[in-house]
Image (cartoon, rainbow, N blue to C red; front, side, top):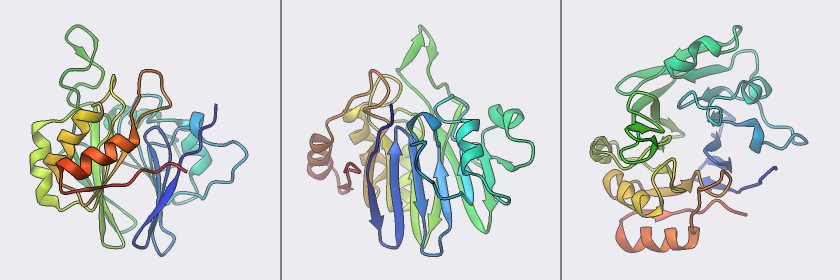
Length: 232
């Protein structure tokens, strides 16, 4: 199953939600970043632009996918990933390990890691789908705009500090079950206070659902942010 989502221009940065947690961003110079590309949701008949940077926020198969990485890489692509995936990275690639509280640089851009984890989403009793230390949210700038990909997370206390980052665009999971659901995503938006928020991680994987129009209404009624729904 191939799912085609939508795109939007945030000032001079072109953003495409490929689906699930996969985002493509391209700035005015053509500098291209992919976050969590996953081959299952990529169109085999489409020629995707090659990546300058690929970011994997954790090692689950739908966020670290060697097939997608191989398809998108070029000679000097930098792969930013978590330490759990480091040994599985393509040997010929330049890799940089990111974790919460650290930053890495790639092609002159800084990528900052922040916390992401589950509070009440459990694989089995006392075993979260995403325990603390597995996932890393990431903050970075393109064309002077600050972007935040939250990774797979619930609303967490550490998000309160992100309001100081003055994030322009936040990509927030909203599908529930494995991540925060729609109502919890609104709580996260209140904590982070981004200029704009894009709901992701819903509608493709079983048990992840959201009502994007209600999300838009709730964001704009309950927060100071603007919701942008990337669905064609």
